[in-house]
Length: 422
Ligand code: GAL
Image (spheres, rainbow, N blue to C red):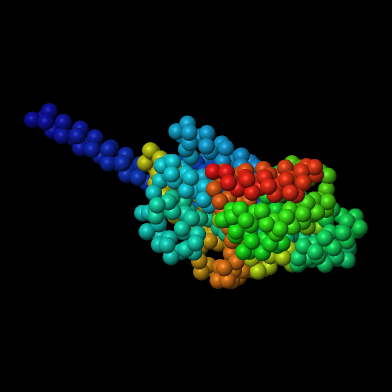
C-alpha cells in the first residue's frame, strides 16, 4: 500500500514538472535571426527598433546584417545559407524575387497571422499582392520608399546662385553653376546598384512614366530600342561629368555625407538618404531639401522593403517568427521605424503628425500617382522585374557609365538583349 502511495506521489510530481516545463516553453521566447543590409546610420537606427520590439516580447534577436547597399551581397549570402539547409527566420527579400523564393518551397505560409491581423485591409492592395505566392502570404511589407528624389544642400545652392532643377535641362544649368562655385555638383557612389538607381531616375525624367513602364517593367523591345532610350543614355552619360573622380566604389551614405557637409550640392537617391540627414541632426527645408528627381514630379518609383519568412523546425523560434510578422505591421513599429528609415508607413491610415514635410509629400504623391496611373515599381531596387533580367541590365548600365569607350548605340543594343535574360 505504502509503495503504491509513493509511486502515485512520484507520478504526480513528475506530471507537475512536465506541466511546468510545457508552460515555461510556451511563455519563453524563441530566437529570430533576421537577414538585412541596414548598416548605415539611419538604417541601423531603424533596424534597432525592430530588435527592441522583439526583445520586449521576450525573444532573442540574432542580427544577420550583411553590409552592402542595395542588398546584392546580402542576397548572395542568403542563397548559400538556404542551400545549406540553414535559413534565417526572416530575410529582407523584395518584389518579384519573392516569387522566385516562393517557387523554391522554402518560405512559410503566414495566412494565419495575416488573417488575425487583418492584413488584407491594412496595406494597399498592389503591395499585398506582391507579398503573396499562389494567393498565400509569404512576406510582410515594412515601408514604402520613394526612389525618384533629388537631395540638395540649400546653403550651397545659395552660395552658387543656382536654382533647384525641375527637369534635366535645368539640372545641367544648376550643375554648371555649382561647379563654378567650387563644389562637386552631384555626389555619386560608383557601385552598380547606385548607377542603376541614377539611370532609372534619368529614364523616368527623360522618357516619362509610359516609356518607363514599357522599357523598365514590361521590358518591351521596341521601347528599349527606341529613340527615347537613346536620349536617356545620352543624358545619363552627360551626368557623369558632374560627379567627382573619387566616386568609384563609394558607399551611398558617404555620398549623402558629402551633401550634408556641403562638399557636394546634390544627390539622386531613394529616401533612405533622408535617414542619414536625420541621423546627422539635419532639418528638412532648412538644412537640406527634398524634391522629385528632375522631370519626375508627377511620378513615383516605389521600393517596398519586406521580410520573407522561412520554414523553421523549432517551435519556440516559429512562435518568435510569428510575433515578428505581427510586430512589423503594428502602428507603433510603423511609426518609429519609418521616422528613422526615411520611408513612409506601408500601413494605411497612419497618423503622420510626427513625420516631416518630405514624408508627407511622399505620402500625398503615393496616393495621387496611384490614382493617376503614374506609380511605377523601381527596377534598380528589385521591384519591377525578376533578378536575372534586372541584374543583366544593371551590369550593362554600369559598364556604360564606367567606360566612355562604350558607345550609346552599343550600350542600347546590349541593354535590349540583357532585358531578355531569363
Ligand atoms: C534598398 C533598400 C533600402 C535601403 C537601400 C540602401 O534596396 O530597399 O531599404 O537599404 O537599399 O541599402
